[in-house]
Length: 257
Image 1 (cartoon, rainbow, N blue to C red):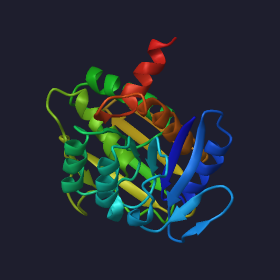
Image 2: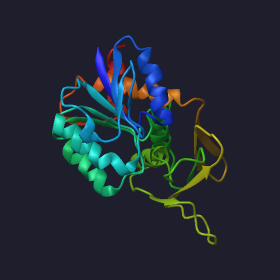
Image 3: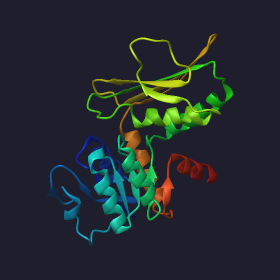
Image 4: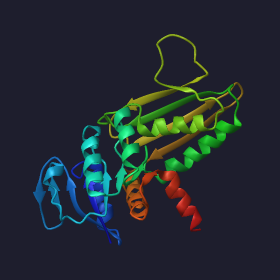
């Protein structure tokens, strides 16, 4: 049984995680970090890392919180030598560098999107990008709910990176575009839409002179991200220190077929 601690447990994604883990035969929620502290018959919730008792048995942390607490989360995880599934996006370059440094001491799983489906199309995008020449314009459109704080989304940046992995020369990445001027072929423009309760919609366009290739993924329920995070946690508890992502999890799944 893997004992999971959830940072961001009182948020929307935290709620989805609790539901999935409570039904899971091999995982259990032992506590979480949230906005309001309380203890019930299921698990305690703390409002700061300093409140978490040292004798709380944790096998892995799953984080769906806020970029503002990721540095403190990293300090807590490395201090207790705990594997960490890091799902929060919008962190600074300095924090990303800290993630890389700390992964030399503990296993960290980091992905811009925890859906297996979005990572599958990321592989497809890399292949399409490699096969097409530079005459194709590349645009990304991403849509999320009106409460999302960061733009572009971590997933959109991940897909832009997949495009660049297929190219001999990397394209620049820009949020939106200037009000005037033609499309720069060496730039991937990402267009961020925020509204309503959109779970997550990502579309990559390869626009040529004679054809348009559209690769799209739509998340219908936030549970898909929670499910992927739980799978990542089960994978991570058996790994040595290092930085892991969905590619490692997918490769493990393929190796067991």
